[in-house]
Structure formats: structure tokens, C-alpha cells
Image 1 (spheres, rainbow, N blue to C red):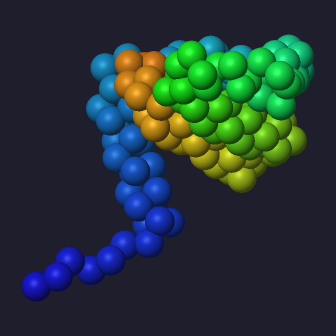
Image 2 (image 1 turned 180 degrees about the horizontal axis):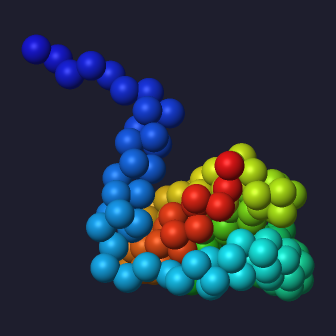
Amino acid sequence: MSKPKTSPKQTLSQLEDTLEQYLVDKSPVQIPENIKELLVTFGPWLMLIGLVAQVPTLLGAIGYLSGGQNPYAFIGRPDIAVSLNIRLIFQVAGMILQAIAIPGLLKRSQAGWNLLYYSVLVITVGALITFNIFGAILGFVLSMYFLFQIRSYYR
């Protein structure tokens, strides 16, 4: 017998349920309510500041990709150059999702929270594809812990 196929939406829903169970319901450490309120109130503004602060670095990286230095990187260590390019693509996609999420997060809407959740997933996939396993796991667990701890504030 073949297993019934699940859609990507069902898979993400199952992942959300599992993360909710382990990072909120069964978590031995809960963030206090006053800290959650601070995260929900000031988090979007801090994220906006962080995104603006990353713009010069992003522009520099894009200039590196399109500039004359990039071909030399491929000669020396093509594996590293390709890895950095792939990671940059996923990082930019994650940053775009975060930027789009900010208005929803300020309104405390579930859609804003979902975009932030997807941005963490995209960045994690980029880290895994480029074999940054430790960074992917650490970033994923910490980001998802905080995200799921404040999830109830977004409806």
C-alpha cells in the first residue's frame, strides 16, 4: 500500500503543530508574560532596525557577486564561492519575508507571524544546503523557540 501524499501546506501545518507541542506545551522553560509582551511590542521595531542595518552589508555582497572579485573567488575555492552565493540568495529571501512581515507584526496579525515563521524556514534551508549544519540547527531552534513562545499574541 502506498502512503497518501501530503501537500506542502499540510507538511508545514504538521511541523507547526509539532513545534508548538515541544517549544510551548512541553518546554521546561517558558518566557514570562511581561517579557513576551515586550518582545511583541518592540520586536518588530528592532527587526526593522536590524534589516536597515543589514542593507549596506547586503549591497556590498551583491556588489561582490556582480563585481570583478567574484570570478577570482571561483578560481581559488569554487566550492566556497558557490556556497556563499547560495547562502546569500536564501538570506535575501528571508530578509524580504521579514520586511514584508513587519506591518503584520505591528498589527499583531497571524499573517505577520506566519511570514516571520517562513523566513526562519527559508534561512534554515539555505544554511542546510550550504552545509552550515550547526548554524542551521542553532538558529532554527532559538528562532522557533522565541517565535512559538509569542505565537499566542498574534491572531
